[in-house]
Length: 497
Image (cartoon, rainbow, N blue to C red; front, side, top):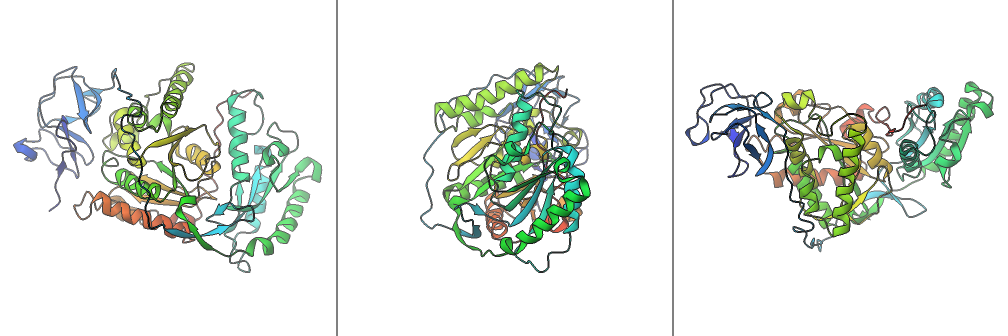
């Protein structure tokens, strides 16, 4: 029978419930539960005095706000954030990463410019919200009309709410343009068409930035209907050309993987996140690249990344992003640790540090080799890298896709519905209950770890093989349901004027 509680480290002050446990249950070591303990929540394994630190993963996750007895439920009613001194230990844990002698491949698409793709889309992208409706009209025209072009994955319409009303020098407009330009040059989009109004700040030329593509503006073309007709005619011309592709074996060293999590719980850091981390280690050993993001969900655990930094410069860049976020939030009267979300708390996560420690498990154990700004282009063959982005899933994923991610793995335990076209998204369930409750959304079940049926390593192997299958053209569940266009959400951090 699978155990009801788990001890993550001998030095921890708490155990983690792997399923709902009733009051008076005999816990590990003869401790009796003095409360009902929901799945994913913490129970004290020893006396914790008021003001004392509470440890999980052998790390401080907060402080007791009252005396806590063994067997008591530990959560927001008796534990809170506090000042934690982190040992950044630059590069202390960095070590050479062995490269596997047996090189694996996936069946990808090699573009004429040498770039690698895992999907074959025509993309229609709005430069500004004013052209979003026209872009949607174009995408809708091609829905269920591509049977004659089996190698075309779709005509996708990517729209957003921004593009004007921003002051030019602000970070927000630069981040927006990087995100748009990154999708324009993404190899999963074979041909791109930019549609604008004609007078916006995010102008068509800046977005294309010398990349091949077509651009049209509603003002120049004589209105919405004329523009839509003209773009449809142009796409009809492009379809035979885009369809003429053939997949071929491509080394995994050229693959770039994005990692996201959403709807996390207290068991995410035990099941789905470390399992993904193991798959990431396998990819890095093949020479591939894995992109970790969500800076505000690394806060309080960033010392584990600086300790794995390949060099001092990378460690300092990581800390610079943390300091930027502290200033960014304080300047707006906010606090960076205003997290977890209500759903996270209901799932057992109490503080941002606890959430962050589980979140960064997605990044595996290898060196951190580079730190990127939001939506910057990520070089291939770099191993584990970090991209600065908010923890909001769609905004963060948009940055990773703009950076060139070919495939994404998205972990969840509360449940999440998500896609990120043109990049396929693989959904990983943290528990069997979620996998059975949302079967149409979840590609893989990591809950077998909690059930005692598989190890982290065994699930990690399954994730790794699924990444290769999806990179080779097999559709993920979110793709089959049509997710991925509405989630396009460039980060606009600027002031709207």
